[in-house]
Length: 272
Image 1 (cartoon, rainbow, N blue to C red):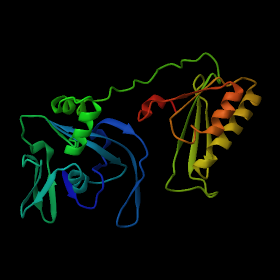
Image 2 (cartoon, rainbow, N blue to C red):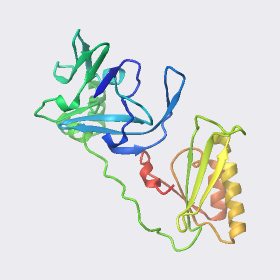
Image 3 (cartoon, one colour):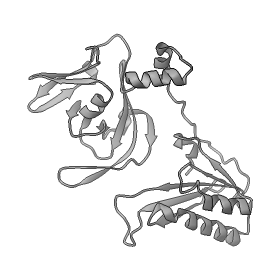
Image 4 (cartoon, rainbow, N blue to C red):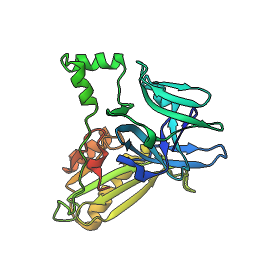
């Protein structure tokens, strides 16, 4: 059962097993009326029969499934409330979802939705966006642009075995934060470094993202001296804490290769 909420900025659920195409990513927190917080730990799609609800946030501990009225409206869908029912419609008036009112709550049961055709909510572009893509794709017709919008990204299967033959040949790195609760020393970022061969993991705590280059360079110098082995390759995402002049100049001076995962594809950096 799903509830419609005007205060939500995102569709949210506390049931991770409902989500398909799940992307695990810390996306901030949700604050409740009693001043308690819950973390948003990723997002995925809800699929029921011929209906797909895109980009539903997974909120740990959330007791209800919530549809965001604002998120529907931002995608040019019309949310209509009456005394005993509610509906979500397209601009052309076609009803996509229908709910009923119980006390002061409007609820939608996806299992009760009857439709013979595929419905993909929140994947529809506005007219302005459609014309923009039309020009970018060498005036491709709108029928094919619609098909492109519903294509799914293939999953990245985890590698069961390391691709290296010795320690320090490849280090995977990622920075997470800011954490909603900082340490007693005021640190709220975590730099995680994983050796591809041994899977040995180092963890560094930072006060801000700006500390990353200095902490990273100190770690590389110390580790190579302590283990008496050269570091050959780093693999990170494209964030500026790793992709900057200070880090690049040091790596080039030491002959260390730096690889980046593809943009908007965190799965490629899945080891860390």
